[in-house]
Image (cartoon, rainbow, N blue to C red; front, side, top):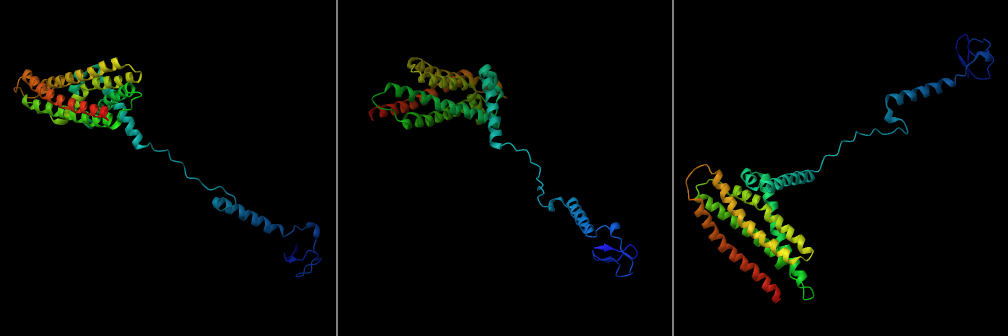
Length: 278
């Protein structure tokens, strides 16, 4: 299409004179009108793209920024418990008496005491089970439930009774210590017996039966010493003077625990005899 230079009227491409004013149209000085819409369309498209990038065909969608992954609460709690128990273990091995006086009824101390209790109650019967399996090779295999599971709960019950007796004799010394604090103090001293029980289990793997038996004997000896040491920590930290003399407290504790130990020994030996008969 051609534009008249005089009146700006749009004419056909082959027109020689303007249909409005009749002036001759100079084809050499014309710019095709049809190019203008393309420019406008291109400009419009460019403008639309600039104003709204997401509307352009093939434009990449805007991705929201990635948030850093939050740590798993369970894993973080396990790390805290592990670190707390490791420090508790080191302090208990380095200075058991002082560490026992510093623990209380806090949640961390209770968790550390429960871990020690589980280690002691689990690995002692496991070492007996492993030794019995090696000794009875070819004759059979000891029952896992009778040799490990039942003794596991019996040892937990035995520790609970020991703590209850310590709590009772603490009242005889006129101490106001609570039951949970008696538990954490006693379990701090039980770090050594629990470690010996674990060592006895490891030794049993290598068929060192004599050494394993010696270690198990040391477990019960150190457990008795742990209860006596707990009595002395209660005596040293009690707020009010007076009460029964610590000598008689130890005698009473020894008599009660001897009876309890005989009953539990009879129950454990009965489990082993029943296992051999079956």
